[in-house]
Length: 71
Length: 144
Image (tube, rainbow over all chains, first blue to last red; front, side, top):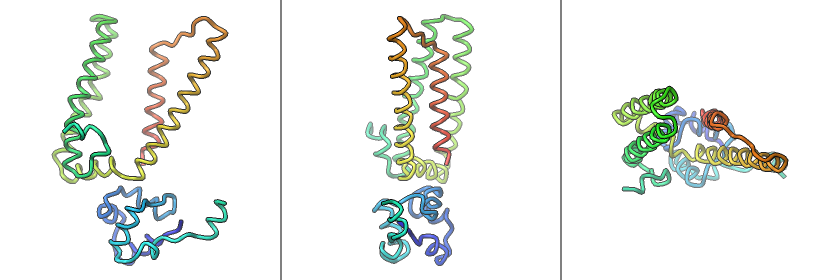
């Protein structure tokens, strides 16, 4: 699963710390999300979508190359 | 009120405060119980005094940390987020699963060896080393 969290965060001018505070997670979780090392839960994905005033599908999408590797 | 003994019921900062304040007397009781067991086994000896000093230092540090966290709303929130963070919960589950597998492997090896030998001695030192290795691994994995 790939995401555009970093792009949205930069566009909104929000720091990782501030985003973590708003999402009620640790900064390490935001870092892991942006690096693609962690897949957010549905609850967190929904909160991120609400925060960035967009839909979950605009932030998170599957990468065919990654899915091929996993298969 | 007793529901706040469990991490899963901690949602807000105030819940975290209750969680810590509930665990403080329990931790104290466990510490005193351990001291009493050591005293019963060794009496008023250097082992007991050493255990008392060694055990009270981390406890004092814990109390100081608790006072600092509970007196600052920012630190309280930060500590609560560390406890309730979803990624940390998953990592913690993985770490305990790995620790459990290693401990089960050790027990299996000891059982196999005990077939050949009558008695396998596991001293207090061995258990303490194992405990510190487990705690060391846990804090190493959870450091981030």
